[in-house]
Amino acid sequence: MSILTRGLPEFVVCRGERYEIETDFRVWIDFYERARERDIPGMLKVYRRLPPSLSEALELAAEFGRGGALPYGSGHRGGRALLDYEADAGLIYAAFMGEYGIDLCEARLHWYKFCALLAGLGEGRALSRVMAIRGMDPSAQTDSGRRSELRRLQRIYACPDRRSLEERDADAAAVLGKFY
Image 1 (tube, helix red, strand yellow):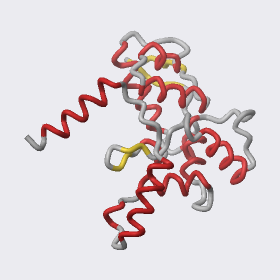
Image 2 (tube, helix red, strand yellow; image 1 turned 180 degrees about the horizontal axis):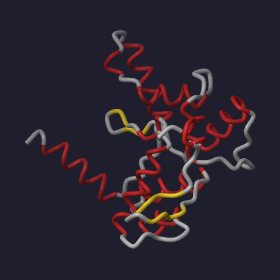
Image 3 (cartoon, helix red, strand yellow; image 1 turned 45 degrees about the vertical axis):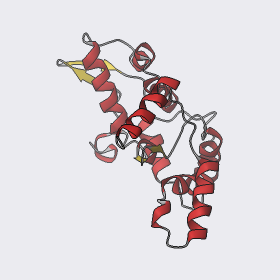
Image 4 (tube, helix red, strand yellow; image 1 turned 90 degrees about the vertical axis):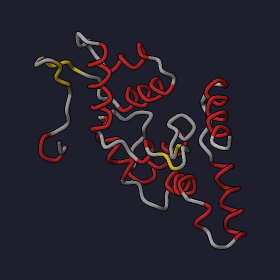
């Protein structure tokens, strides 16, 4: 669906019935934060009135969220996040103010508009540069000095690891399991 030809959606359809959904970008940033924390009741706050099926409600909400062509923050390279809405809040704010003159503390933006504007940020913005550093593959650097510098910058600009201790242990065990 194109926002240019069909406008911005305000609802999802479940079993033939419309369910109004919150569209403000803040609500959707919170949705993704809640999803990361596996907080299902928090994720469902995007609805003004819940659909009858919890699984369908979550599926439709996720589909709506992706419909905004979720920007490069949804992608990972090697398991590393490129964007963290909480940690990068200042950079996001500065980018929108500098690029578009939009004060995100005061603006009301539909999630789809927010995503389109975020994806369209110029390469000269600090946020764009940080995300580019996070997404680069150090092994693609032929010069060992550049490779070392890129790894150093990636440590500095890495998104916070928000996994629980149990999740970190499980991931470490999975990696070790490959060697044994």
